[in-house]
Image 1 (tube, rainbow, N blue to C red):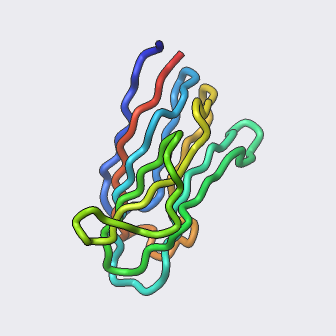
Image 2 (cartoon, one colour; image 1 turned 45 degrees about the vertical axis):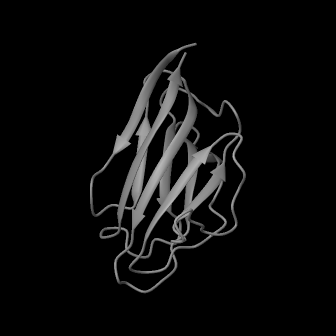
Length: 137
């Protein structure tokens, strides 16, 4: 087993998050909290692996649900979870969803793991918080 590293970005007024590492890593899990402003429009969150050297996107699973204005939603991204086409909540509040990534999603040194709103409705004002873990070789 390699070294476990955290990914964390709680900077507000930003719905695009980029992470890079100096060593290769495998993504274990990512938890995203997205708080949207009152600006109308449906947000569509997704994750990209971007090869900066070749300037191409290599992998991008997107949530199967969209998020409307003035809401807080929680996205769990990991291997071996059931992909949810709806928001649900154990307490009756439908605010959670899951997205699946391949087990051992490998990111080379210098590549970018990007989590963002593909719809780009209110990029400079929506608040996205990202936490997770990767394993370094």
